[in-house]
Image (cartoon, rainbow, N blue to C red):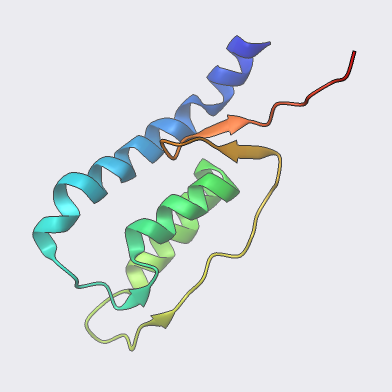
Length: 102
């Protein structure tokens, strides 16, 4: 069961690693240029964590398209998503563990 759960979350976590790598390596080179709060990379990270790879990626792409020099920007908070998953200390998605009393 754990192997299937790991395989199920592998694409999502691979994309999250890409976003985390972007935030560590490339984003600092650009400086503070995002017109929105939270930044586009933070928004994308949260959307993919909460909504999944496909829907989260679509929402992130729409956000990146809107973040341009002609946009006024502003606050664009991520609304809470599914509570089926938990986020570990590295920012990756894991299945919630259920504690059973025996």
